[in-house]
Structures are given as structure tokens and as C-alpha cells.
Image (cartoon, rainbow, N blue to C red; front, side, top):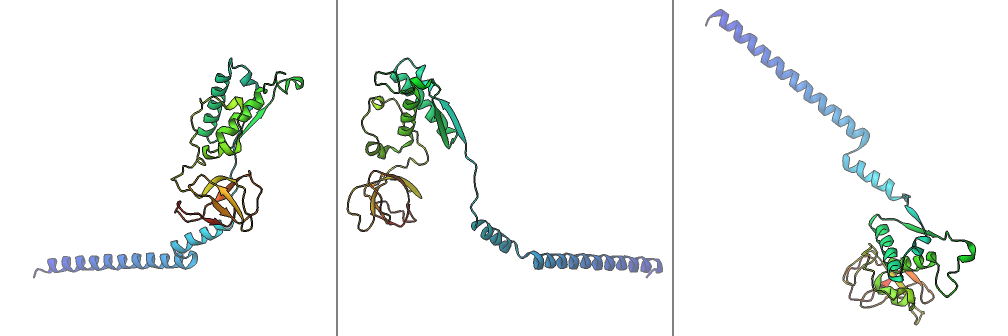
Length: 228
């Protein structure tokens, strides 16, 4: 073999060996760093679980959004039908934008707060009545709202708010109204299902409540629930 070729081959072999050793050193260094990080911080799964345990023990306070509406806006309506439609538009807007609270204030003079004097409600009281009616799930309205002349116009479509749950839909919470009956074991509550549910608290009839429905998704059976 030519001596020059032998020297070149030996040099190439030495460079290849040197590169191999450097790669091995880098790999060992990476493994050492990963091991140190795992020992110090724990595995990603353990870190996630620790965060969940920490968050699970605390209640996070979320801000709420409120709007204020002058009752005099109703006084500008030219008829009861138009006033009803205006109140319905306010309710739908508040629902779409997820408003938590609607504050209705009376901007009329104190001498006029009782109405017009001929039995008519003030604009503020009228607006409050319509908003409360629309906020209530449809299956509770007959029990909670007696007949009233300001509720006689069927112009208001359902709001389909999140708490307006239909009969066939399961929800973790349902709005209900307490019923009369034997209270030796608790209170029966109408929550809009085919059958009433029983809660362990003793409550007076006609009271609106929010019922925690538990984990049982069978809506065809009477459920005995522990709390409101």
C-alpha cells in the first residue's frame, strides 16, 4: 500500500473515532440533565397532578357582569304590546352577552313611582316583572307567576338560557319549585321531569330552588337527592 494512502486512511479513522466519542459525550450529558430535572421537579404527570390537587382545594372567584336599565325606557313604548317586546329584547340581549345581573332603577319622580294612578304599573316594575318571567324556566312559570294582565301577550319567544333545561336533557343542576306534601323524609321538588325529585331538606312550598341532580342520568325515575 502506498504510505501516503495509509496515512490518510489512519487520519480519517482517527477523525471518525473522535466524532463518535463526542456524540457519546453529548448523549450522556443530555441524559444526566434529564435525570436531574426529573429528580428535582418530578415527572410531568406528577407535576400535573400536584397542580390539580392545589387547584382543587380552592374556590376561584370569577367576576360577574351587571348592567343597569332605567325603567323609564318602558314609558316610551306606545302600547303594552310594544312595551312587552322591548322588555323581551332587553332580556334576550342580556342572555346572549351572558349578563349575570340586570339592575332596573326607577328614574321617575318619587310621586310617580307607584304608577299612573289608575292601577297601571310603573315602567320599572313592569320591566322587572317581564324580566323575572323570562328568566324563569318555562316549566316553573305556571307555579311561580299568577295570572296578570301584563303577562297576557304571547309575544315573547323562549330565551333558551343555559338553565332552561328541557325535559329530556340531563343537567348537573336544575331549577325547581318546592311542592306541598309529606315532609317526613324531605321535600318534593318539581324540576321539570316526568316525576318529582326528593331532597332531604325541609322547605316551605312554593319556594324556587336550584337542585344538584347528582350523577344519575336516568331521568325516568324519582331521584333522592342530598342537597340543594
